[in-house]
Figure 1 (cartoon, rainbow, N blue to C red):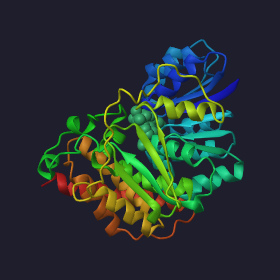
Figure 2: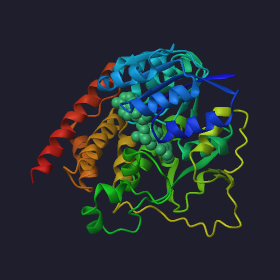
Figure 3: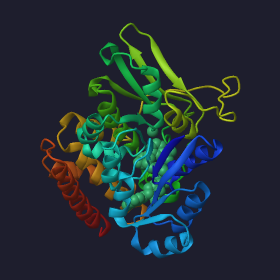
Length: 386
Ligand code: NAD
Ligand code: MG
């Protein structure tokens, strides 16, 4: 039996992971489940899986969780420190599915204790750069990418030498505004922006898909995970989201990974790796899926791609600043304080106003993340006063 821990068990990725775990009774034993504030959903999942530890980040939700789990030998941990403590508990396999840099400390803690770390929380990697990779390497933790494009590339690469790569291609659905004009995007509401045409995901990543900052973060993620230089990283808009990633070699051969538009497929890959889990209904039928289209991304309407590439080229703490400013600007848009196009303007202005020094210690990473949030918050406030 594989013991597992799910950080962010109540989110879109967390729920898909729990769905897989429930389908294979006797194969997985759940140790730890964590959530931000959904006490009832967390309690339901803990009771259904017989998890031993439940951690909730928001202390206001803790009494409800404690009430739901009273009288059972389940350990309840509270606050950001409680989630961190839970992440330190032993497990053979850990899903890092907290959204945003809030997941950095728990994800790092999981990386530091060995086993398999299935990484969905791309913001933790982008903001901490090599820290997370170094922590995993030191502890002998096997990092497996959950992000569908990176999981696809991981499978296509299959440990082949990266030096023989000509190009690594991440596909993008193009999001809900693939064909929208800048005028339409300027008026976009949060409801329109989260309505993703292909994937059902949490609010933050849905907005990132609409601005295409998701692909920008993924370029940085790919650079870190696979050690591929920025010049060899490409993105391709593919609205059907059935080809997830492609690796092109020096001799012209291209190996692509295809699969259904269902995050359970890459999650299952990491759960069983190097084995496979049989998922009968998750099938892609190429005879009925219709035409597959590919087009280059439009950086004029989606400047996030250029801004993220620039941050990757600049290096140092630029990716940390990019990620932090983006989190603040997305939250401000979701709260209807600023507009859709303001998101990337705020990210760009934050990057211009702060010096991207070489990343130092983890404390320095956290300090620059904090400074970027401060700056981006001020920029959003100025925009919302317009
Ligand atoms: P979500 O918003 O649906 O879920 C986020 C989870 O994190 C929830 O369990 C929530 O309780 C927890 N959380 C939020 N803030 C927290 C905090 N401050 N402290 C502790 N826990 C907190 O998000 P999601 O769509 O599941 O995405 C999770 C991560 O996976 C993100 O980094 C996202 O970019 C990545 N990802 C998601 C998908 C997808 O299809 N949803 C695909 C690829 C990558
Ligand atoms: Mg992705």
